Length: 200
Ligand SMILES: Nc1nc2c(c(=O)[nH]1)N[C@H]1C(S)=C(S)[C@@H](COP(=O)(O)O)O[C@H]1N2
Ligand SMILES: [Mo]
Image 1: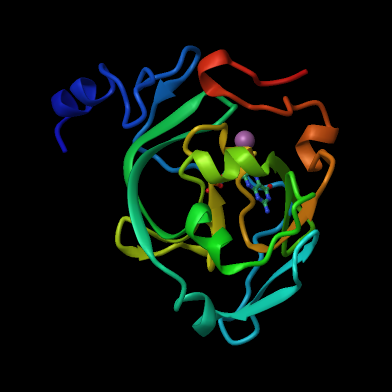
Image 2 (image 1 turned 45 degrees about the horizontal axis):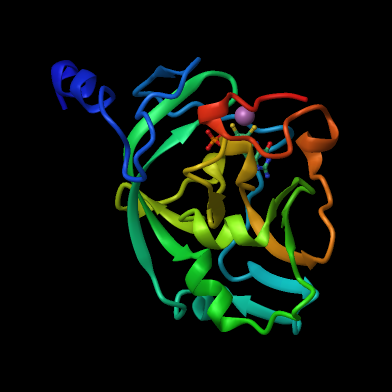
């Protein structure tokens, strides 16, 4: 893609009508790796994904997970450290489809993502459903690399990227909000890039 078309790409609005380049962000064609701690290496054979809390407990192997409805979306990635990447194609299971395959209890209102390595991050259930949140395993047509959270990570196009756990291995459903790793350590609970909700 030429530099010229890249500049044009970030001038307008994105797929959900927000300014393509949020205030305080710059565009990069790199995909930096931002991990607190080590890259987790999980073989597909050992990989498991689990739901618990205010939901009927369920677990998926990799093969089972791939039988869930698969989607691709083209969307942008905004890191709180001010870089944004544009128009990558992400493949995986949209949370809004995933949620049809589990049995939530009516009291479930919040979701805490858990990951191999211990990282956590939280979002309201309503936002997980409304905001194109994806359990993503594919990036621009190739399996997501371990550094970027493969085999599976959460991608949150409408929130800063720390709201998506790399190496995600479970979702805990809760009645009350429970802040995750960075939220406890000073990052915004809501993380809206268009409001520059970076820290509290
Ligand atoms: N498990 C885990 N997930 C994580 C993080 C992490 O340290 N561990 N960092 C978050 C932050 S702060 C960002 S900006 C993005 C970075 O994703 P990337 O390394 O693929 O660019 O992952 C998020 N998810
Ligand atoms: Mo980040």
